[in-house]
Figure (cartoon, helix red, strand yellow):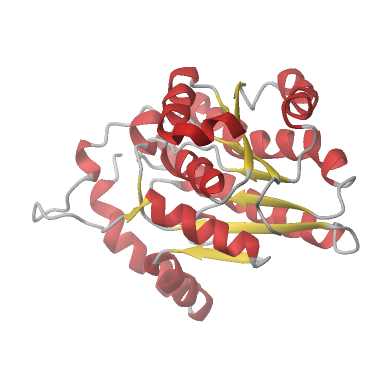
Amino acid sequence: MELKNKVILVTGGANGIGRELVLNLLSKGARVAAVDIDQAGLEETSQLAGAAAERMSKHNVDITDRSAVSALPEKVIAAHSQVDGLINNAGIIQPFVKINALDYGSIDRVMDINFNGTVNMTKAFLPHLLERPAAQIVNISSMGGFLPVPGQGVYGASQAAIKLFSEALFAELANTGVQVSVVFPGAIATDIAARSGIDVTAMQADESGQSSFKPMPASKAAEIIIDGMLKNRFHIMVGSDSKFMNFLYRLSPKFATNFILKQMGSLLSE
């Protein structure tokens, strides 16, 4: 897909990878509908876009609200006349605690935003995407969607659900003009933990006081995602950690699970 004058919708466009996706798409000549529950963040994304913001529309929508999402295609088409692509990026993580200690409210919130939000947006926009000569859906999962991370069991389950949902969608749309890609980012430098209501203090260093990971800049992650989208890649791996752990997990799931436990175990709360 060529991006110039195409209309791409991005959820989570107020910050992090979503913001960088919006800015990158605009820089490549696309028109962008940015969706987020954070109106102030959307305004900041618009300001950062500079003159290109004239090709951007802002939509303050809660993606877990099905009635609001159902009304969104009409608003996007009113602003841009068409829609050619959907990037489901919005998501949160859970508190770093074991499943036994995770409250049901946190479980429901993670599944509702991450998985149900992706389903809601896909269901709302797919009929319109099918009307285009060529269109694309890109769903952002996570390295945690194929690798079980202790302390992020429900978050990982939501991302694994996105993975299988996307792969099934790919198969179902094989004879249409709609391409489907699923993305697996590793550690990315965003404020997703703070925005998820998580205390990030304990996550910033290992037992020796040194940084426990080297996150990729969100702008670089956005570039990789858009490049993969343009090349119609089925799976888009983002980061050397994601690529390595994907290889290791395919080689030996049990070894990979024990390996990540050693890396992340110190972050776990009881």
